[in-house]
Amino acid sequence: MPGPSPHLPSGPRTLPGEGRTAVVTGASSGIGAATATRLAAEGFDVVLGARRLDRLTTLADSIGARALPLDVTDEASVAAFTGALDRVDVLVNNAGGAFDARPVAEADLDSWARTYEVNVLGTVRLTAALLPALRASGAGDVLFVGSTAGLVSYEGGASYTAAKHGVHTLAETLRLELVGEPVRVIEIAPGMVRTDEFSLNRLGSAEAADAVYRGVREPLVAEDVADCIAWALTRPHHVNVDLLVVRPRAQAAQHKVHRE
Image (cartoon, rainbow, N blue to C red; front, side, top):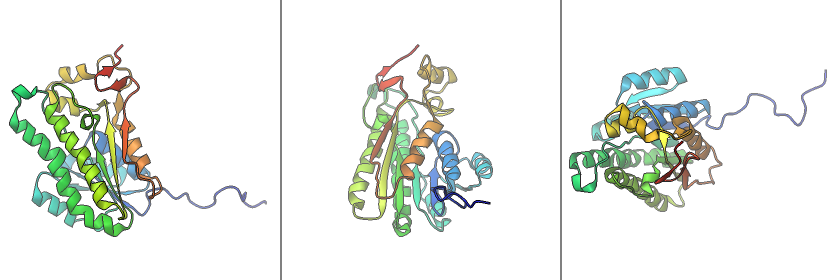
């Protein structure tokens, strides 16, 4: 019988993430859960972090990942989480959220503080804790899940846009500080993404959340963003995707959305 074609690969296919450990925060739902699922499929050894351990464990069991409790706003929780990790090659900073849609004149400062604590300070806290491991990996990645709200402001979104502008600046600053070191700094900035919880948490009712997407043909879903994240992380390590803005075709800008 003839042997294998010299033009075809032989043996098992090597997956892009094999041998690399990826930490995904906010992984119990939405973009975080979709990202964890996609990275596991790409061969990464995935560690999931979130507060809702029951949901996290169910997901981890289904994709062959590891679940650890994590509250990025709590120093002790971050210390326990990072202390349980043997190695880290990739950190996906996804934990975050929006919790109100009030104008500045009616600002709820408790909501502002919560938004900033989760999106910015929590991200800084975990990133700083894991940087030694990312450096030691020899080919580390810090990926921030930002938002187009971190690039363009809009009415009624000040607490969230301020926080996401903070995340954007954090990514830019960290990239400058780490230049010459074996760590990439990547930011993915999604526009309109329909998930089960984001708008519901922000607006407080299913009716108000549904109105955000009403008439919009094919808003992005979590898996679309996870696809972008996986693509950026699996480029050759000399290729740094500084900033990737991704929107549905129906959204040309923050204020320009086609509704049918």
